[in-house]
Length: 99
Image (tube, rainbow, N blue to C red):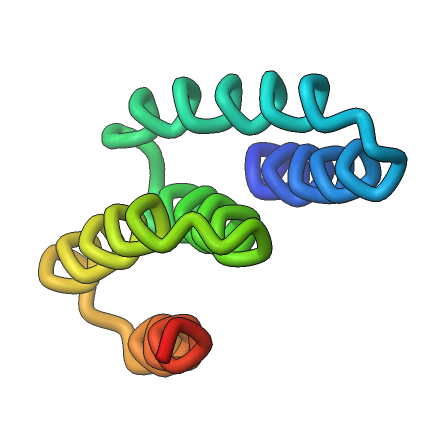
């Protein structure tokens, strides 16, 4: 799905800006991603999941544990609505990164 590819592309861009030490640009893009994620509730679970995973990983890379915890909770809520063993395993891997 095209939306999933956009989320992946944006995550790559955030990482590239961070690597280039363009932190303000990276933060602005991350903020835009966060805002867009709030409008995904009517999208397929795969799109929602991909957005949450990308955001959680980007926050984890910058040691923003509070934001990672928020994304993990949103992932947990999505799994309640749309159970999926592969996604559950993916969430567990992300949780272990925080330990």
